[in-house]
Structures are given as C-alpha cells and as structure tokens.
Amino acid sequence: MIEKKVVVASTNPVKVQAALAGLQRMFPDVTFTAEPVSVPSEVADQPFSDEETLQGALNRVKNARTLQPEADFWVGLEGGVDVMGQDLTTFAWIVVQAGEKVGQARSGTFFLPKAVAELVAQGVELGPANDQIFGQVNSKQKGGAIGILSQGVVDRKELYEQAVVLALVPFKSPELY
Image (cartoon, rainbow, N blue to C red; front, top):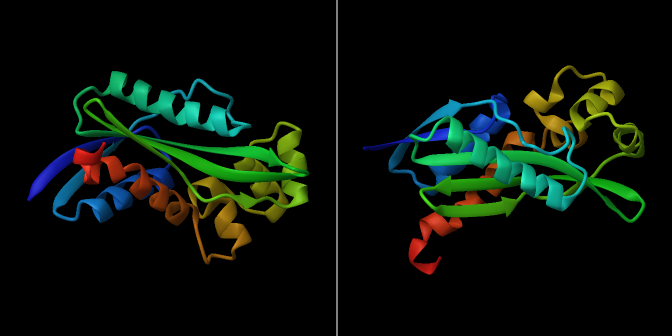
C-alpha cells in the first residue's frame, strides 16, 4: 500500500480528522499519516468575509509548507463568517496543495442564531460565542456550531470533510486541471 505524509495546518483534532477522512475517501488505496502543525493564518482570529477566510486557508498552507517542506500534501482549513442581508453566516475554506498543484473548496454555509451573531459582531470568535450561548466547552474542537445547531445530525468534521473532498477534485482528475 502507498503511504503519504499530510501536513495539516492546524492542531485542532476536528480539522485533522476531516483532512484525513477526505483524503482517504478520495484515495482509498493510500495510507495517509497526518502531521498537525500550528501556523499563523495571517488574517483575523475570526475571519469576517469570504475573501479573508480563503486567504487564511491559503496562508496556512503556505506557512505549513515552509515549516514542514517534506510532505506529499499540505492542507489548510479556515472557518469564517460573513454577513448576508441582516444575518450572519458561517462556512470554511479548504486549500490542499501537493507539489505545485492547488485545490480549493468552500464548505456548506448556514445561518447563525441572532444571539451568536451579536457576540461575533462584538469581536468574540465563533467558537467561544457558541460556548457562551449554548453552555458548551471548546465546541470548536468537537461538533462546532453545526453540531450544536443541528443537534448532532451534522458535525464540524463532516462539514469540513466534504469540502476537503471537493478541494481534492483536481488531484483525482489531474489530466483535467
């Protein structure tokens, strides 16, 4: 069996698991070993637009590659929020790099409750805002906002895993990209 090293630009276990699960789904004949690393996103702790969130994921991949240049894949996952009308949405951008090839995808988007949105607008990061409103502890390293709001039907790993799969499309069909 083929073995590949993946540097995940996060030490959050949910993000690491999502990266590995997405890679494994796309490449079932490969064994992936993750090396989680903490690197700066070079954007706000709580990215507040689609563009800023994507930039954070791109920066994480760049910084992870600089820190750990010997790998087969580098994966950056960045969660963010954005205003849509009068409401606040949340989503994530995933960037995967192997060699010079880069794939990117955005997760599904969902709307946040007003109480959470108000805290985020005051400068509280989404994870701590969820913890405060819903009486959780470190929810961003568990099911995340989607896990809380869907009552476990979808969790953060699942939401991010699908986006990892989508970011890997150029690697699954390289002749087209």
